[in-house]
Image 1: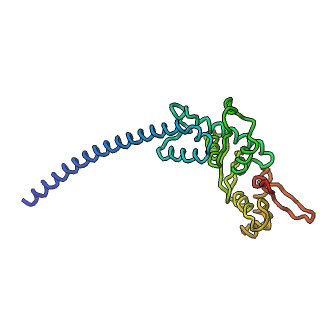
Image 2: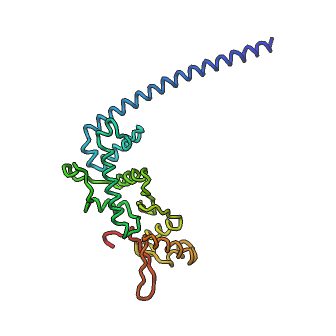
Image 3: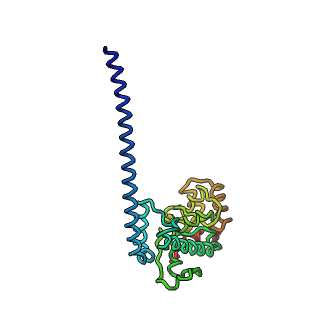
Length: 256
């Protein structure tokens, strides 16, 4: 009968669905095994590549950035891989050493900038003066150049230790903050505005600038600036006419 035919059809359909599901699971297992095997082969090739180019990875920032990109594509976190080959390559040590140097620069400049400094300035200090910190074998190797990305990666390593170090992007600059205090949206807007030299000197701002650009009232401007001044992140300058200017030492450059 038609009903019997329908019931048989439903029964066959279920059996077919179960068979399809089983086959799909088998294919997924094969695909997963194949993918894992491919990744393992790629990791082996990456490891061989790193052995051959160890010096370039350690000394050349551009080469190092490309190598880290390759690792990231494979999901290889060489910073946390302390055992096995990646530990022997010394990349964990490389970023550990750099993170200590970055921390030293940030802490040494904290009395001047209140604990906020441009990544670019840290890099300039490291390339020009270096730091007192050195590994036992540092003097044997050539001088290492760092990229801004290297420094940002080193700060992430510090941040993972719960040190309070972190990076924030403010306008054109990436800043390292080395104090535990949080900066709110108002502080970030003022920092961003201080980098906009269309209204005056780079790194300097007035309450008039803030009011005109952000449409804040006097009290809001004062509150945000007073907090930044209290942290040492902003310096107040009053000229002979009594005009107040607020300077951000973290934005100073060599030619200012």
